[in-house]
Length: 466
Ligand code: 4AD
Image (cartoon, rainbow, N blue to C red; front, top):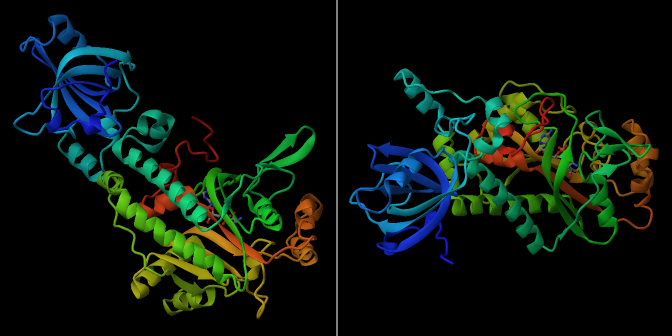
């Protein structure tokens, strides 16, 4: 009946009390034959436990047994809290535990495929260690991903996925508070949702089918279903052939769709308020996680304004032109020009987060609404963090015949999306929305260099496991 105490809550006020904790044996060190030290880790907090025959706390057998434990095993430790004169190196908690009883709940294999201390080092620490001739292994990305369950245990990775969880939470809470309804749309669909070739095809009981490339079509249909404002958090499948630092074959989409009363800027207003609230909240409430990430992967906090900067595409290419980069005024930006523009925007406006809108129609998906004043452009936008895209959004075409025309013009077989087009025939409000890539937001907010770092079990053209 003895209750467990969390390692993170062990402190001076528990001095001389008996506590029971459960955690992993992070390190085990025998000192002579009569004492053994174990650092016990639970959810990022660590405490040192001392099994000592000298203090008559445990038997000789127990000290021997402790010394044979394998790192990362799950153990229960019962003992008395003491306060050492000096803080213990390598433990987050200031107190120590004098072991009375110890049980191994789950034994880890004796040899781990990744040394977690090596896996947690920053690049500069690795260089220093190698220079000093220390025996260590640089853990490469594939080894990490092949052994992800271990890799996730490093402090930086714990930080990354706790931040990811917060991004999802803030997204959901913000939108619920703005009267959006959370929906769940099918991922097995008859036709492609974004067009293009990046679609996983499959056989659906004899019918050709696809994995949804986004909830685009069904979120719009739900707007025709009278919800007014909807959002979804769900998996998105892209049969990408590219091996880049920012493309996955499966990622988590944060999607929004809403009625527009007057102008597509209403959608950008939501982006603005949602993301400023998100960044504020991450900076305020995730200090520990951000620090843990920064210790291994140093980065500067994101620079953003209280009111998000909006530039038109034309203004953007003008800035690039003045900097000597020529862009087709009706073409798209490539990765390099997006980065360059990001730098120019930072220099001129002091922000690494901004919205670029009124893109050329030709580079946007078929469902995008052309600008009323100039149909060569569209009521659409992309949003950037540190010069890389995290969001694309737009007002949509809600007039069924025009939508059919646009789909045909973009080479889409309208038969495969007829139920989508038909849903606009019974009265469809003007509407728009946007899609956010969760892994990209976390990667770029934390200044990380590869999206595989922010996907728990990444899927890329070569990786389908673990
Ligand atoms: O730009 P995308 O393709 O837009 C859509 O899916 C639209 N339906 C959104 C809308 O509502 N108009 O994807 C949206 C976001 C991108 O900005 C990017 O953050 C992310 O999804 N994304 C990817 N993330 C990881 N791997 C990939 N292959 C991605 N493709 C897009």
